[in-house]
Length: 253
Image (cartoon, rainbow, N blue to C red; front, top):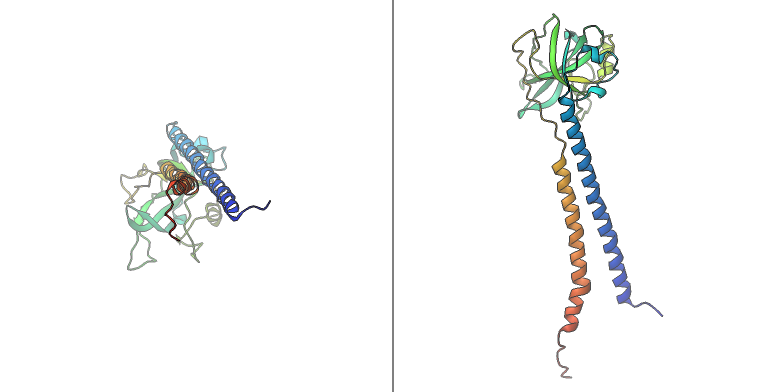
């Protein structure tokens, strides 16, 4: 017995609705899992920040800053002023400018740790001009937060050498100086021990886990899934029954 066109359409709509609902529900659940992961990450960051500050001795056995990410730190060393890099196209407090990044040669270690020292606005009349930043020659104690390598921005033919750069390869830059490097960075939170003020802004953006964003996406996917169910029930079940229950107009033929 052949299947009528109406039956084929019924099964096609049913299968399409089931597949679509399955897909959107799965995407909603995936967003919830992402939110749970981000919440765990945020909790881990808070717990790390509460640990005792990292000191030079803690860094000696490490090749990267990953084991001590997000922990507070108080490390001593000497600035390698000649290696200062100005990362271009950075923003702080709605101002455009540079992140000033200087290698700090760690006392008792010899390796350099790149320090994201702060922000300076750029000179829009002379875009290749970099401001002078006070860099003491004496040993300093730098307080901050352990971090990964400086964040990357989109680079289109930007300089990979020189004081102004789009991005910083901490390993290659240390090799330019002929020095070994501890891979990662330190985000400085206050002026170093040698001076009260260095003219750098340090209103660093808070690390946002983005949990609310994932909850919002999950709500959208679940809402779309529910909408498809409602539309299916209305057009495939309720609407046909309403039409069947309505009186037919008399035939005057």
